[in-house]
Image (cartoon, rainbow, N blue to C red):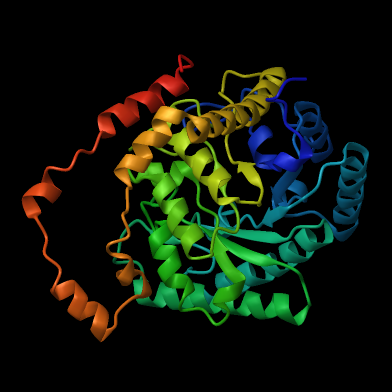
Length: 388
């Protein structure tokens, strides 16, 4: 065991749908056989994970009888007990079945919207039964291919009504559960509603119980839109809304690749890990990623180990960054503050405004100030490349 071996305190989790992905894509049939939820729990335990998350139908098929449901859940609980894995998060599949072809909470059909609520209530019950404290909503079908088909104001109202209803359901049942909304710009629909972290943060303020609702940002989803994921995570953290996080990797502008964490955009992954560790994020580090289609299940285990190992390597690199004398000296130089403007820290007052108005500024000197960002970035690259 080395320092990059995952431990329970690292809170590394995977979804049943991640390691259970069959290797199917829009152009090819599955390359791996289906494993049962119990087998997937054991696979994750062998890889060293802390927990396992699931959509309702990852565990219980959508057409299962009550007796089948009880048997599956009983066997799953036994697997959790045998391996020590926990279930920190659960979610609902509101996108696979044809009933959701026009959305779930934002479907034009009120019967579909009602069914989506019923399905989600049942799934919440299941998640709570298995110990989940966070419940994620990814609106994979909440959107349009043509704006002729749906009024976005109606859709926003329907989505808001659904979340308000479900918040009341959680409160009425006394569940210790919070909701986390997961934005994505597109795919599988052409345009998804609430496509970014910022859009979701604005929407949350319109809910009846905004304190119960936060975010589950995902690396790939922000990268698909060419956005800086760490900045989005910082915005969610600053708002007190980083309830959960999905880690994977993704090239800008591509389809949703869900690659192994840190496998293609290493510097972006480094600054993300550094941010999470620096601010003291205590939630799950959930890997919503898939092994290559070429992988067999032994390689899937290597994929899972790789996600966790890369995170821990980058965590160590972040500690080195924070302890590097030259890097820290540069940061002190860049952020130097002699206290002259400390009077502004208390916000506006007439006295502060008068003092600011009377303060002389030398624009030429300010514009000529040295900002050694090239050196700072090169030192970061050398640290990541292992030569520092």
